[in-house]
Amino acid sequence: QLRAEARWPGERAERGQELERIVVNELGVDSMTTWLCPMLMRDGLAEVAEALIEELAAVKNEEIMTLALEGLGSVRVSAGTHVSDWTMADGRFLWHGARAVIKLIASGETSVRDKRILELGCGLGIVGMACALAGAASVHLTDYDQELLNACDRTIALNKVENIVST
Image (cartoon, rainbow, N blue to C red; front, side, top):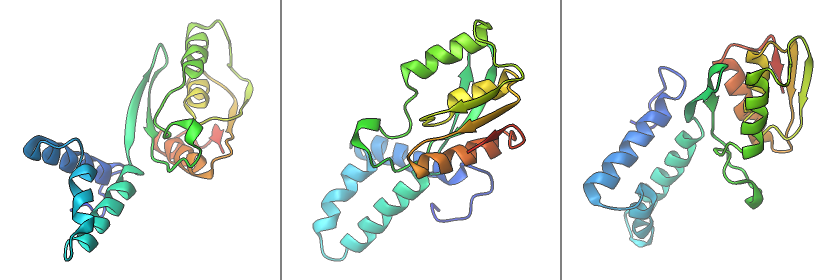
């Protein structure tokens, strides 16, 4: 089921989340990975357990969240990444600074209307998306992590703002 082709963006991630929920509820474990790890040491099960863990990681990369941006509407966000920098959480965290900037934009205290925006260290690109929703002429997202930029490209496509936002 996890490897089946997605019929809509994020469908495989939804199936992975549902499987995770069932395993946690039915088997009383913290996570499906916790349940699978002991199987890695057993002959005959190790290969299957490893394949399942890899597939769960792959579908997590396809996860899509909907975030409400106060006063600006909502955006669909591709949250999947394998951030290798241990200082940067896991690519699913909206930093407090980003929240503060979004509030300034939404309140009109900081106007981005008709402006060209460059977001340095964009992470998930939420501030840039807020700028696009608030009427920015163009937004360019940058980050040192190529996988985060790949996730941003998926977010841009999900929200159909390719004519305004780029990486």
